[in-house]
Image (cartoon, rainbow, N blue to C red; front, side, top):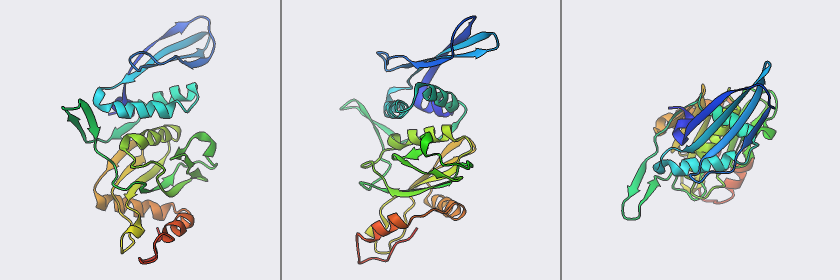
Length: 255
């Protein structure tokens, strides 16, 4: 399905006016948690307008919808509108495990990690010559696009991160960088917590060819990480030194 359909339902109404102005605004949130954008742009001697209404897909996906909206609301109205339009052209291949608690009447999304503040890596390219630090290309508030490369390894700033807490960031990033070719790898466990101090490969999201694909086969995740790590290396010395300082009884760790 397309990325917008995964998170939300969308309705749009459009037409032309003889007079107007180029503008994009977000109306106040509706009673049913819907978000309505009004966009008008000049086309020749007329003005094209569109009302774009985004609302929750269904209750079992409400966490995904809420976190997407929270991520978008950090951005200007016009950028939000453009990202939503781009999401219609992007594919997403991911099926979260969601169960229903009949006793309490709520849905539970299976956790993405076991570690309190897990380790993750991003490797790839956005094919841009300049730094994208000003363009909201970031994960966990840290920019990771610079000089055609995207690379970062960090312990997550999110406590026990759930899929719905970081997936919207991947979607927004992909929408802003349509040429993105990168892999987001969740290692989960910190290497020095294990005697052999080796990386784990819990799952990955591949961001490539206008598509976001979740991969849970550990062997394939490891293969992708090693491929992208070799093609798009980045300086990980700071996080390595930090991690290696935690314990002195295990092998020294390097990415």
